[in-house]
Structures are given as C-alpha cells and as structure tokens.
Image 1 (cartoon, rainbow, N blue to C red):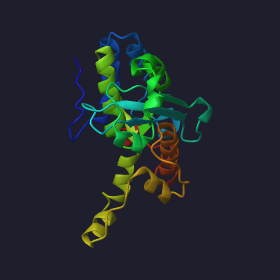
Image 2 (cartoon, helix red, strand yellow):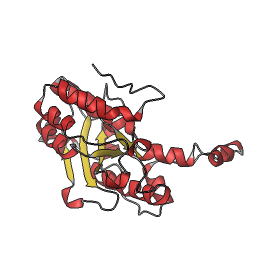
Image 3 (cartoon, rainbow, N blue to C red):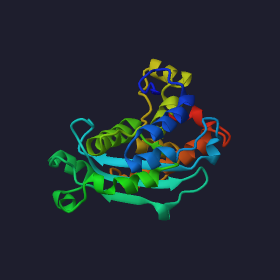
Image 4 (cartoon, rainbow, N blue to C red):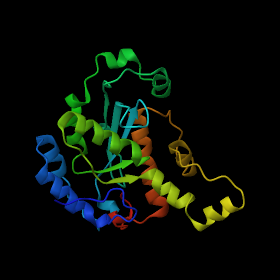
Length: 242
C-alpha cells in the first residue's frame, strides 16, 4: 500500500498523483471513489492551466478532534477567472451544541442550524463540486483536517488531498525571506499573514470576514493576486501545493 508522508518535513511533492490513484483503488465509498479518480493533476502542470476551487469552512473551534464544521463555502476559479455563478454554500448541523463564543465568531445561530442537514447529507454534493479541481485555502490546517475527520466519522474512510495554501505563500514571501528576517532582527514585528491583511497588501477590497462563502471568494482573489504579482503562469504546480 502506498503511504504519503503527510507530516514529513521534506515531502516529495511529486508523490501526490500516486497517492491519489492509490486511494481511488482503495476506498469503498462510491462518492470518495469518484472524488479521488477525478484528479488528473500532473505536478509539472503550469499553474495557469490548473482548475482551482477556493474552499473555506467555519467551525466551532480549531481542533478537529473536539470541534465541528458549521458552514462550508466554495468558489471555482482559474488563474484568469472566478466562476461566481457556480459558488456553493452550506450550513450544516454540528454534532455538538454551539458555544456562545462560536456564535459570536461566525454568527451562525442555534436557529440556523436547527433545520440544517448533517454533513453526511450534503457530502456527495460537496465532493462532486471539489472533484478534479485543486483546492485553495487560507491556512490549510483547518479545511483539510476538519473535512478528513468529518468524513471518517460518517463514511469510515478519510479524504486527504493536495491544497495550495495562500497563507503559507504569504509566509514564504513576507516572513521567511532574508529581508523579512533582517527586519525581525532589527526589532520590527513580522508581517501579518491573516486573510484581511494579506489582501490589503495587494490592494484588494475589504470584505466582512468569518463567512465561509465570502472568505472562499476572498481566498480565490488573493491567490489570483499572488500569482499575478509573484509567479508566472508557467510555474509548475509542485512548487505551490502542499
């Protein structure tokens, strides 16, 4: 069985196609089979040719082992165009009660989730909307582990996939460069790589945060701006995904 070294510091980014093909042959759930089989992304493919989808989730906390997803937004796009008419948004019922802190943060209330479906009821639809596209997120330690944990709990099988992380790209550009390290050595605070602050650096408009669909759109626009400013359309995929 092929094993992908997810947490290894020196991951071979060319290993993703083999992993995805292996998962397509291993999973039993039909929706997961279709999801994994739809990937046809060569690590050397130019980013300008890659079909993308921005994904954002609002959750009841930051630990996928103790917290749950309450809303999901996604926006398909490419380097050149955002396909807003094909956007999708779901509110889903968490398996544990909402806390007041959670409600204050994402503004989804008890009444909104009272009639909301369980994630399992919209999961096939969600996986179909993601299938064949490379997922783009802002902070990959939320969407990917939360979805993996939620799918395991409902279908008995996990769902791992490559992502491009716009926060990680901002960190690479504004925190890990020699100039950024020099500024920290001089006592200057590190640049913020939060979604709102990252968008400001590219002159993008301010949006109301902590709404899954709005944040997905904000992430898509941010990645387009990052590509236009720092990368070529011919940049190979393996240099950008995680």
